[in-house]
Length: 83
Image (cartoon, rainbow, N blue to C red; front, side, top):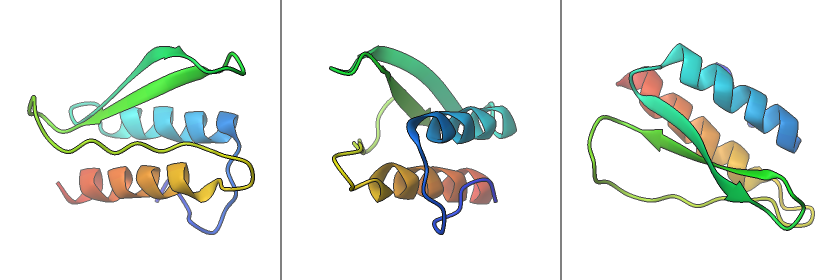
């Protein structure tokens, strides 16, 4: 597995794992940047699946709360792997 819930990820490491997953599952995962944060970091959107509609999951890092993006990325990996 690419994403480990036992690790602490920085912005750059999350981006690296996201790109790696999009290369592993190019027909399922599409990554695009949609803007910039107040810290001038790129805000990414990850689209999963082949349809035009579906659920929307939003995740981000706030203070020391950094697990949410990791969990979402882990879910994306599991869905893609099991597709």
